[in-house]
Image 1: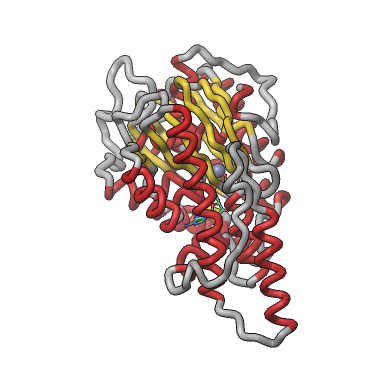
Image 2: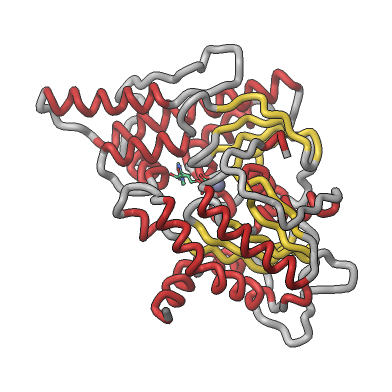
Amino acid sequence: MSENISTVRDNCKKSEEYLKNNSFNIEKTEENTNVANGDIITLAIESSCDETACSIVKNGREVLSNIISTQIETHKKFGGVVPEIASRKHIENIDIVVQDALDSAGLGFKDITHIAVTYGPGLVGALLVGLSYAKALSFTLGIPLVGVNHIEGHLSANYIEHKDLKPPFITLIVSGGHTHLVEVKDYGKYEVIGKTKDDASGEAFDKVARAMKLGYPGGPIIDKMAKNGNPKAIDFPKALINDDGYDFSFSGLKSSVLNYLNSMKMKNEEINESDVCASFQDAVVDVLSHKAIKLCKDKGYNTITLSGGVAANSALRKKMKELSGRENLDLKYPSLILCTDNAAMIGCAGYYRYVGGRRDGMDLNAVPNLKIDKG
Ligand code: KG4
Ligand code: ZN
C-alpha cells in the first residue's frame, strides 16, 4: 500500500510543478490565509478516464491545488485504457489524491463550500468512483453537490488560464473522446455547431500510434516524431475540409494511414515513420484549424479557444496561431497541464454551475454519453 501511495504521489509531481511555476501557493499555512469570508471554495473530483484528480479552486478561477494521478503507466502495456483496471485504480487513488489536494491548498474539509464532480461523459465504472466519493463527501459534510460535464470542464480550463476571458466565444474541444466545435453563448450555455461523425481526433492519434507500435498515448509521441518528418511527404485525406458544414471525420484518415503502412510492408519498402507521423498530423491539424477559423468568421466572433488533450499538440497550436493572426482573431489555449484531464477545470466549471444555482442530489447518476448542450 505504501508503495502505491508513493507511485500516486510521484505521478502528482508534474501538477505540483505547474503550481509552483505559476506562483500558486501550495504550502500549507497555519492560518488558512488562502480563504477569506465570502470566498467560494470548490473541491473538485475528476475520474472519467485514466486520471484520478482532485483540485481546490477559489472563486472559480484561482487554483489552490491541482493533484493529478495518472494511470498511463498501467494502461500503456495494453495499448489503451482498460476500463475495469481504470475503475480499480481510481478506488486505490482517490483517498490519497483528495487528501493531497487539501494539504497542498493548506485547507481542511471545513473550508470547502461545495463539491464539484464529473458525472459524464466517460467510462461508467470510472465515473462512478469519483461520483460516489463526491456524494459521500457532500452528504457527510452537509455541503452541496454539483455535477459537471467533463467537456464543459475542458473548455473551462481557459477561464483559469486567461482571467479576462468571458463568453461569448467559439471553442474547439479536442480530446481522446471528443472533437467538438462549440459556440459558448454564456457560462453554461452552449450550442454544438460541429462534431466528429466517427473517431475523435485524439482517438485517431492513439490508433495510428498503436498501428505503428509507437506506444500509448499516441498524441504526444506522434507530436514529437512529426518534428523530424515532412508533413507533405504523404498525401493523406482531409475529410470534409471543403464541406460547408462544421462536422469532422477521422476514421477514413486513420484507415488511409493503416493502408499506407500495409502497402509499404507488402512492397517491402522502408517506412519513414517521422514522415508518416508528420503527414498524418498535418491532415488532422489542417481540418481542425480550417473549420475552427471558418466558424469564427461565419458567426462573426473574434475570440477562439482550444481545449482538451489534443490542444497540447504543437502543430495545432502553431497553425491556429498563424491562421488566427492572419484573421485578427484572439486565440487562447491553456498550458499543457490544463489541456489533458485534471480536476481544476472541473472546479472552475462547477463554480459557475454552483453560482448559477445548480444543486444535485444523492440520485445523481453517471452518464457515459452525456452531451454538453443537455446539462
Ligand atoms: O483530454 P484528455 O486528457 O482525455 C480525454 O478527455 O479524452 O485527452 C487525451 C488525448 C489522447 O488521445 C492523447 O493522445 C491526446 O489527448 N494528446 C495529444 C497530445 N497530448 C495528448 N494529441 C496530439 N498531440 C499531443 N501533444
Ligand atoms: Zn478529457
